[in-house]
Structures are given as C-alpha cells and as structure tokens.
Image (cartoon, rainbow, N blue to C red; front, side, top):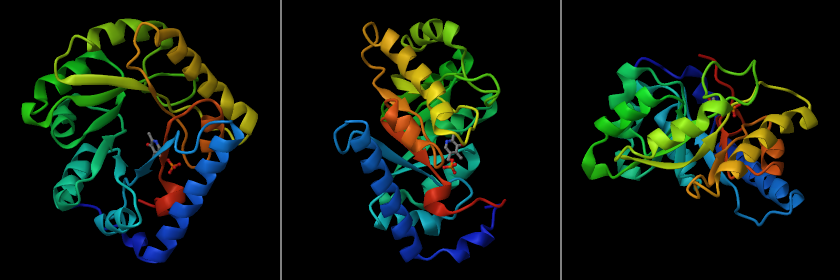
Length: 240
Ligand SMILES: *Cc1c(COP(=O)(O)O)cnc(C)c1O
C-alpha cells in the first residue's frame, strides 16, 4: 500500500476507545436534545488514510461500519480485514474508472450523483454479493463540494436508479459547506430533510439521511440525521 500512515503511531487502543465513547456520548446527547429515541442515529467511522491496525482496534471497541473515500485504498483494506466481516461504505467522489472496485468491495455507496455512475455500479456489482445499497448525494449549499445532484434533478435520478437491478436505493447524503456556527450548520441539513420528506411518500425506501461529521454532528442530528460519518474525532487528524 502506498500510504505509510506515520502519524497513527501517536494513537493507542485506549485513546481510540475514549474517542469512540465520547462520540457515542455526543450522539446520545444530541438524540436526547432532539427528542429522538436512543439508537436512532448510527455511527459510520471514517477511516480514510488511517491504518488497518487502527481499524482493527476500532472494531474491537465495537464499531462495525467503516467509510472510505478512495476506491483502491478501500479495496486493499477490505481484503486485508476480510476476517472481521466489516461493513464498508464508499463516501468519496466517484470516477467512472473506479466503479468496478467500488461495486466489488463496498456494501454501501453514499456518493452516487449521476446516472452513468449508478449504471456502472449496477452492471459491475458481483451478483453473489446481493444489491449494493445506495444513497444519492445532494447539493444543499452552493460552495460545498463539486459533487452532488442538484435538488431539482433529484427526482429524475431517483426514477432512473430505481430501474437498476443491482442497486438498492436507501436514502440521501449531503456534505454542506463548512460553518462553525451551529444555527448556520443546521440550514443545509434541514434542507435535505425537507427534500426527503417531500419524496418519501412516493419513495418510502429513502429512509436513510447520511449527514453530519466530527464538527457538525449535533446540528445534523437535530435536523433528522440517522447516520453520521465521523473521522477526525475517532481516529485523529489526517496529515497525508
Ligand atoms: C472525510 C469525510 C468525513 C469525515 O470527516 P471528519 O471531519 O474527519 O469527521 C465525512 N464524510 C465525508 C464524505 C468525508 O469525506
């Protein structure tokens, strides 16, 4: 593997355990503050650029779902950790020459934002693995990442994705422009939730809302997130 992960040596299994309990505490507190039942929100541990050793420790501390942004890196880690039976989520931008790796090694993909990519993922999904669970990435603020379908074309994409045999549509994801201010953080999350609510009568499968990261998970949970993607506050900063 190309990455050497030199900074991971700073972290011990005890540090990781403490970080994970603190994240779980924050999630429970945010659920409670929002009047939502404990356990309403699931935790996805974003392990991009972190070593397989840290992922093993995180698994020993009780985590089962891991998120990766780079197809090759996810494929290598999934192969090296296949004994653990982990659930892999691909959450990064998708280049069309990487769809084969993603279709083979991930269980979930959060970042589908165009039909061509969805078609390739469906075509390349190994049939014995069952359908690939898919979230559609929606743009909820202008300055955010380049990725994401515009809300006004989301319905068309949903209808097309629903015809693909090896994909199972599960919900929506967003990566808003970053903001330090809690009230401002909530605006794009509220927007995604409103979009979901406008569609869910017609598409009851769109139950998952993947939103919230280390710095804004409280805002996301307040606005209805049920899957938060946390990297830094579990595994430490990423330097490479
Ligand atoms: C890296 C990443 C995260 C995790 O971000 P942190 O701020 O480290 O918690 C979440 N979602 C996506 C799509 C990412 O690329």
